[in-house]
Image (cartoon, rainbow, N blue to C red; front, side, top):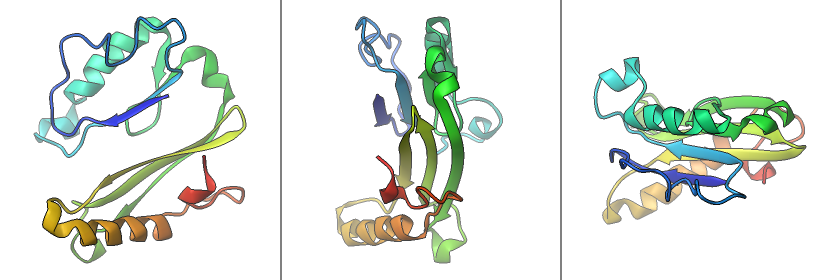
Length: 155
């Protein structure tokens, strides 16, 4: 599995190294967080990372998953179950959605996986606020699932 935060950087021209495309046992899953939005158009159209990932991975039998640019090899698709997505706001009084966490959980061959992406307070002088926001997200973000309702219940 490969996962990373690309922030607001544009994708490189060649993704071969980044995606380990020359590795015969390459990743089965990719997850990328490319927010925050840079342009209003990113809310209407796919962002540059979505476009380059789809054009690169689709010919290799990967399909776009739900939210957070989640991709899996086509051969694994029938073994993905119980997909849920949710979010927790930590921005201004929990109402403004500029900060917080977005999460997707799923069963992959019976293993409960959870991907969490957070956009938290920036800069070193806000380190304690980031920890508080992260702990808040870990506490408040709950899935509608008896087996693994909390983030920490997943692998």
